[in-house]
Length: 97
View 1 (cartoon, helix red, strand yellow):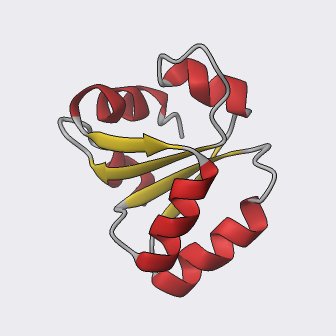
View 2 (cartoon, rainbow, N blue to C red):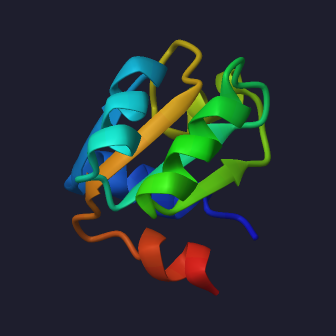
View 3 (cartoon, one colour):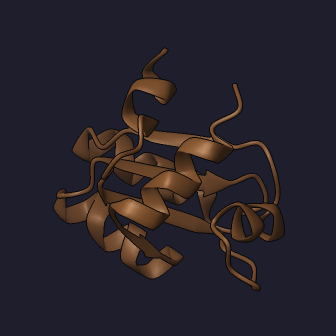
């Protein structure tokens, strides 16, 4: 499953936030529609546990943080992307299928 184009469209047209700290808060408090976790995220297990407890959907991105950053159009590594509004993206449908 290649969700790269859907991620990029969500970043460009929706409301997303980057970073582990914000994702942890969103997973604990709710509010996020989806959390995308890079394969090399240092606290992925902890984040997935919080997501499961709050019933927030989480998906593991098949690439590293550098790859996720590139997909998002950023010149830096991104360990976690939190989607609040998907915009014109089909990312929510793409990860459910």
